[in-house]
Structure formats: structure tokens, C-alpha cells
Length: 456
Image 1 (cartoon, rainbow, N blue to C red):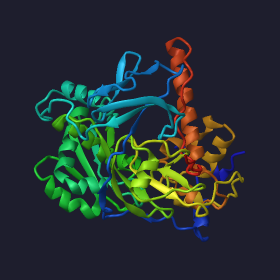
Image 2: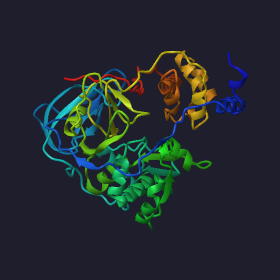
Image 3: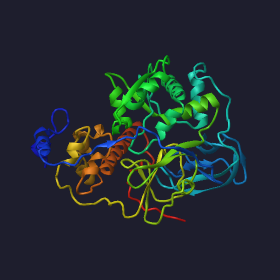
Image 4: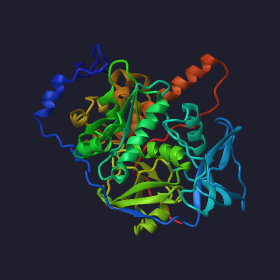
């Protein structure tokens, strides 16, 4: 039963004013997490003998995925390694020899799929003729990004495009390292992405401590510099989008690494071949930044960085709050990985299935003032249709609620489950309206940073 304190008001949000006031009279845990304003040192890691380039799953949930290469075949940089239906996908990041195709873990949290094993013979090879991003047609630019495998995921109509040159979580400094390495490239990438989106407002979002210097580097480029507070969760894409949104506008937020990949594909004709990855320890502190070849196994990254995971340790791709757990060190770095976190055995507490104790601490720390405890209950008992009335769509998935929960409930995972199920239901309804019964679909991953590492 819904209590008066939690009943949705006219806006669909619970009326929590009196309840929150009473809560603030009690001791509530602090949830303040500063972001790093100085990047960790950057180390170039040598490419391993074999790269594992993940293609994806091949089953009944859509067009069949197939490798387009075979063992012992020589490939050039930019040559597609697979097809989905008739569409070529996943260009090779470098020239080399195909060592085989095998099942491999999905670093993004999905089920295992096919990966092409590539023995590299180059690094950062030119695959296409360079283009001038200011003179080439938008259609030509889009074709280039598609051939290079760069996915910007721009909406059809975006009035504002933000290139996010700040790292999303505490301890991670991969984006900051890229920004300071070449501020001019960050500015050019911002203009390129805005042109591709047809947006008349290009924005480069940086930490406040770096705003003045970056503003000077981008002087005359017609780019707006958006300073961000160096405190989590101010740099999350969802929070940044709300900072720049104006009435009627549709902002798009693109991570700097992805924008720079697009710039490299256009200006240099290169397929993205590496990522800057921050390695974090159990406390979330940075061990260092490392430039890693795409397709490098997580185990090889740790070995090259001098870090040794042991049985019982936890491995997370991403940060302390929103990262994805990895069950195997055979998963490989791809364009989504900006950090690797090693959580040593005995330094973490597992999530609990205990019920909510109604302490209200999640209400106090939520930057969107959402009743996370209610959203979690609805998701836990499959009452997904009730979550939109309690602000589900406004959740930015920062995970602060879970950091203060005394019952150790997996609040963020429940909220992500609710979002996934509502989206799946909406897709099925749309497909039913359009015609034939939809094929089974692969669910999106839910971040659960408590998986145990397995070793060879």
C-alpha cells in the first residue's frame, strides 16, 4: 500500500518534503566523492601477440552474425572481420594474420559470442584516404565512420552536441589524459561531431580546474566551454545533458575518446586501434593510465601493467559506482572500456537480499531526489509498470543510493532491471503494432560488480 508520504503528486514524483526534513535531523552518511583534476602518468603498453576482436552473438535474435575471415588469412587494417546479414562489421584495427575464431566473453556484460583472434603486424595503420572534416560532405563523413567502425550514436536531430572531456567516476583520468595531451584535437573533434549531428551549438565539457586553459586552446573555434564541478556525479553523461538542455533542445553527449576516434578516422584515415585505460585498486585509487591495443585480453593488460589478479579477486570494467563485473580474464578491451578495477579478496562486502529497512538514506543522497527504495521494491517484485510514476526515467544511475544503504541492497541493479524491462515491453508492443511477432531479443547487461575472477 502506498503511504501518504510516498504517494505520487501531480508531477508523478512522491511528496517527500516532510519525510526528508525529518531525515536530515538524523545522522545520514556523507556521499561526497571528489574527481581527480590531475591525470595519472600514461604508459604505452606493447601489443600482445594475439588480439581478440569481439564480434558478438550469433543466434535467432536477429540477422545472423558470421565471421568473414578464416584462419591463416592475412588482413589489412580496416578490412571487415564479420558480417551481420549482408552488412560488413568490425573493421580490423590493424594489419595482421588471423589465428582463428572462437567463443569469447563479452566485456560489455552480455553472453559469450564470437571473437576473431588476430596476430597484429602493425599499429595505428592508415586504412583509408584522409578527409578534410570541414570540407567533406556530411554523407562522406558518415560513410567514413561506418567503415572505420566508429559509432557516435547521435540522435536524428540534436540542437546541442557536448563532447565530454571529463571522466565519469572518481579515480578515472583516461579522458583527462587525452584532453591534456592535445586540447586542439579535442576542439576539432567537437566541431566534427557537431557537424555530423547538424547541431549549431558545439560544447566541450571539462572540469572547472581546466576550463580556462582549454578555453584559450579553443579560442576562435566557436566552441562553448562548459565547466563541470570536480565531484561525482557531475560528470556523468546524463547529468551533463541536463546542464545544457534548454526548452525544445535535444542534447547529445559524446565521450571524448569516441569523438577523437571519429576525428582520427576522418583526418588520418585510421580505424581506432587503442584505448587509454585507467587501472584502479580496491579503494578506487588510480594505479596509472595505460594505452592499450583494442582486443587485448584483460589478463594481458594486468600482466603488462605489473598487476596480478588472484583467485577470489573481483575485476570490474569501469569505475566503482557503475562498472560491469567480469567473470573471465579472457574478455578483451574494446571501445567501451575506460577503466579496469581490481578489487582484492577480502576488501569488499557482497550485496544482500535483505529487505529495505526504510532508513531513508537513499532519499537524502539522490541528486534527482528520487525514492530509490520504492523503485527497488517495485523492480524486486516485477511491478515494473509502477516505476515510471516514481521518476524512473529521471534516474541518472549514479549509484550513490547503494553506497549508503545499510542493508547492502543492489539498488542500482534493480533500477537498471526496471528500465530494461520497460524498454523491452515497449519494443514488443511496437513490434506487435507493426506486424509479425518479434524474435527473442538479447537483454542489455546489468552492472553487478561482485563477480569472481576465473583464471586459466
